[in-house]
Image (cartoon, rainbow, N blue to C red; front, side):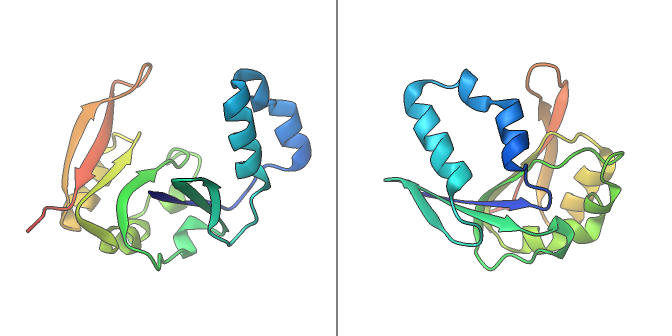
Length: 145
């Protein structure tokens, strides 16, 4: 079962969602799930499917201290040039502290300063091949022992 926690400081408005029209790119079954995710209430862990629940949190990442422990952390933030305040070492610490042993931290970033910050917090961090259009990205994990 997956409990997915999403932190969003600037959620899209209804008009913006209509303009991007993601539903045009989805199959019928996925459209229903996507609509449930969009309509899910904020600040409540909401069941979306039998094995997937979503909690949307309306806050700034740099102010967020997780209550839950984390198995997989996908740090999908805009780049450091756009949002330098969420690429500073102090933003990673509360997240990494909640990462379970064997837990994974992944981000499309490939900056050496990010990799070193994660290593300084006790993670094993390395560069791995990125998705199409991105040469490398960072993958880190908390050792089991």
